[in-house]
Length: 87
Image (cartoon, rainbow, N blue to C red; front, side, top):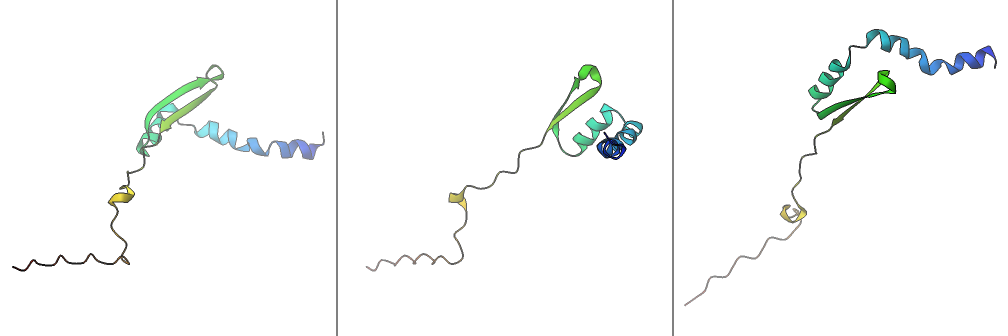
């Protein structure tokens, strides 16, 4: 393999040194996820603890009103008034 090919293959790993040097720990990741509004935080060590999978759940989106409860469109004709009974 040529030197150029080997150097290009390493492009995807250049960030690792900085990531390792600035890693603040699992508790910092937990705090970031919870501050962002996620819930049910969990972590699972992988490869004997060399890597850790962090998981969290996003809150459900706000419920919307059912279509039947939606107001009538502005183009709909108004209902006719009830006629008064005459005696």
